[in-house]
Length: 227
Image 1 (tube, rainbow, N blue to C red):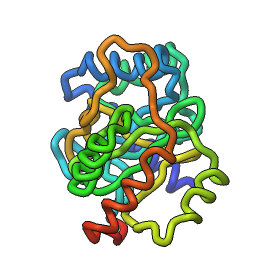
Image 2: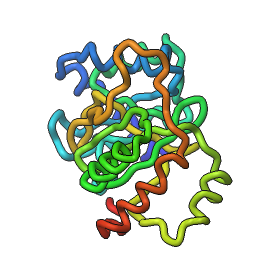
Image 3: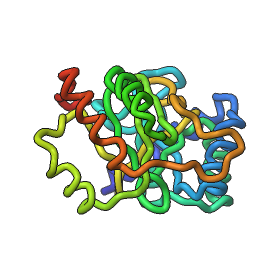
Image 4: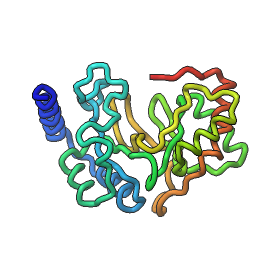
């Protein structure tokens, strides 16, 4: 336990020093406050990359599978919509990635590899299906959807002959990094941005998008899970 606490203190010290060396990003704290207070999406700061523009993660895991793009301290359960807490987090760490805790009261998400996602969005547009915000990272795109239960998701997937392993579901207990964050794998951006000045963004039910996503992944052969 003493060793773990020592590593945690060292990490927090490194994060603090990194924030002091890096210019603050007013758009980062503004975005975090919009998500938390105007939209009531629970957020918390991510661990961030080891250095700005670096592919590494600031966490102690040398083989981190999500470099810079996950919570560390505080943990995911600390996600909040409290204005004072969110402001304090990003005042102390102005470049920290913005992590959304998926599940009610915030949205859930469905994600797939970027190339397949671009094709799937084209199919959804041609089907005239209304989409909510879509988050894009260099490797994966995340379609934000209405909160769903595990039971509801299980019933939906059980009806499918096959569900490609590269299709991932981010529900209760999961998370998604939101723009304008920077992680160890690059910049996070909006592929489909919420309407400017809008109230809490509308998101579709998961049933509305899953059929097209499964069909696109099956047709393109992108079925193996990605790291």
